Length: 155
Image (cartoon, rainbow, N blue to C red; front, side):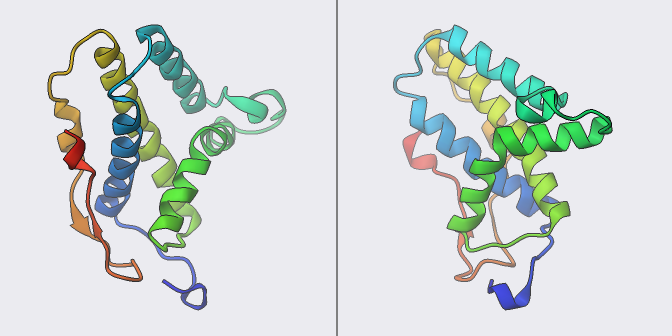
């Protein structure tokens, strides 16, 4: 994907696949030493705030904004860095519609990861069935036609 080609629109499957990469990176980074279950409960609460448009600066300084605008700003603040890093890693520049979809799906994926890590913190390392919801596939838009794969080696 070059800048000259302009932003692309992701398919739903590509969006969920990329969110799955975020899930795997997050879940595998903390799996061996997840800390306390209370910490992951706090993470889930912050994520919930983002989905409700009540997270970060946007929640405090959005007078006159619609609920949808508040939610978009909160999701960007909460998950935008991870979304941008994932897109950059795969050489992708996406349109606003795709970025918003990826913010939503990444938020859902990180909720799933936080639930898994909460269980890990409680000593439950059984397989996470939610991890199977993320499709594997080749992106139509990647420079090197990278296979969008998940980091399953850690499991």
